[in-house]
Image (cartoon, rainbow, N blue to C red; front, side):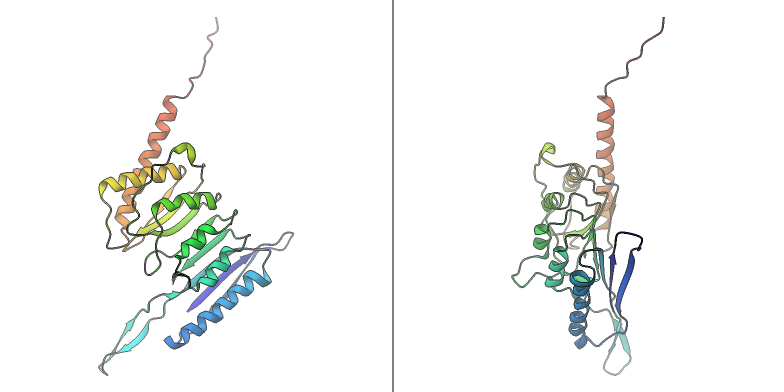
Length: 264
């Protein structure tokens, strides 16, 4: 089952109206490619046609169908098929939509494009100054980003308030970046995870928390994902909150004291 929700806003009295295009019935595996092509055509029509000037939000979902698998004629079980790959052409088309403020992709994978470039290369090259929310698949066959590539996200999307992405399993080296060289960013929600077979030691947790506090001083929440080390990221969030408290205490300590004049 595949569904896309696109939200367009227009000036004047007309209200924003969500529109949903849905393929309701489960289909044989052989028909998935055909359905995906039709689905992407609907998305393209919305983005480049009907709402090319007013579309601000796109949410693409793919709900997995449990299909019967017969066991040699002795009954059946159900299996959940692997997530379907969102064509790179569709993903890159969305990243060229200048008015985009909200992009959420769930239930799909984001494979490398035909040139074998990771999907996040297209994300880092995008120019979306108004983007506030970007939620991308975590885990599976979707490659993660390197931790230091968060610096690219800061520069590319200055208004971003919510980010979801996975980290690659070898990405936990934090670069030495002077605080003065990083623009103030207002990200509030970070939804992350990393490869189930990789691990983060205590020193890495401390460095990651410090790095995130420098990048996102207003971070309010780190959301986790089952099977992708939720306990590590919950602990890192606690460390980030300690960094924030330390910064506040330091600022209060060196705040210019109030001057009181005693009446005589």
